[in-house]
Image 1 (cartoon, rainbow, N blue to C red):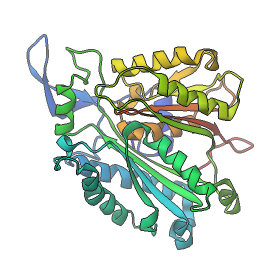
Image 2 (image 1 turned 120 degrees about the vertical axis):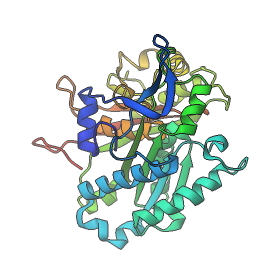
Image 3 (image 1 turned 90 degrees about the horizontal axis):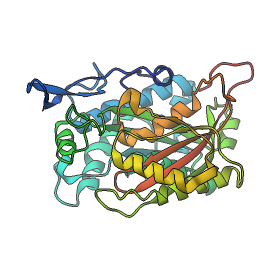
Image 4 (image 1 turned 45 degrees about the vertical axis):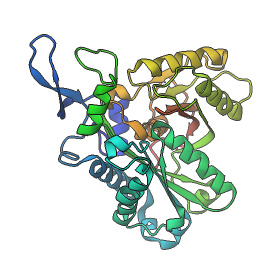
Length: 359
C-alpha cells in the first residue's frame, strides 16, 4: 500500500518507473517565503484511503490493506487452512514508541501500542495465529531486517515454519508532523534539506525453504544473508557510519567473503543530512567491497515511509526489471533507524524459467 500503487505489482512498477504523486498535506500548514501565504506542506499521502484517520487508524488501514493484497495474490486456498497459520508467526514493525506523539504516560509507549494497535490488528486480520507467536517490533526503519533475522533464528530452532511480517508507518499525522517541523527535519521551501512525509504498509511472508517447497509455494526471492547492529543511542544521531558499515560487511561476508558487490542497493536515504553523512562514511569504510553500487531511493517516489521502508525495499529488490542486469543478481536493502538500529539484507530474486512473475 503506497501513494503510487495499492498492490505489490502496481507499487513496484510505479516506483521503478520513477512515478511520484506528491500532494498538499492539510495536516500541516507552512508559510511560503515569497508570498508569505499560508500553504499546505507537500507530502505523499495515500489519497482516498487514509484520509480522516489518526495515526493508529492509518496504521490499521495500511496493515489490513497490505495483508489483504498478500493473501489474495499469493496464498489462495491456504489462507483458510488453520494448520497453515498454526505454524506461522506474526511480527509487526512500527515506529519507536514516542510518548509525545502517542500521548501516553512517560515510559508507557510500548504497552500503549500493544493494547491500542497490535491487539486490535490481530483481531481485525482474523488469522488464526497463536498469540504466543505474535510480536511487536517498534524500532522504525530497521524493523524489517530485525524481523527477518529473528524469523530465520526461529526457523532454525523449528519454532515456526513461516513468519508474516507487517511493516506500517505514516508521517501524515498532525502531532508527528509538528514534532518533525520543530526538530527541523521537514523539507520545505525555506529548508531544502529534509524529509518529505509519506506513508505505506507492506506485508511479507518469510518461509523456511523446506516448508515452501512442500506446499509448492510461489517464491519471489531468497534471503542470502541478513545482519543488524546499533549505533550509540543518541538524539540527534551522530553520523559515524561504523555500525552500518559493519552490518553491511557481515552481510556481504555471509554471501561471499572476498568478492566485491556490484548489484543494486535499496536505501532509506530520505534527504536528511545525517543519513547522507552516515551513508557516505559507511561507504568510505567499506571501500572496494561495494564496487560502484546502483543506488535506488524509493523516497523519490513515495517520500519517507519510516518503519515500512525496509519491507518496501525488499519488494522493490525482488520485483526489479532492469534489462542491463542479471535478473537473479543479488541486491542489498539498507535500513537505519532514528535511534540507532541498522540493518542490511542480501536478497536474491527468483524468476520462473520461461519468464513471468511469481508470488
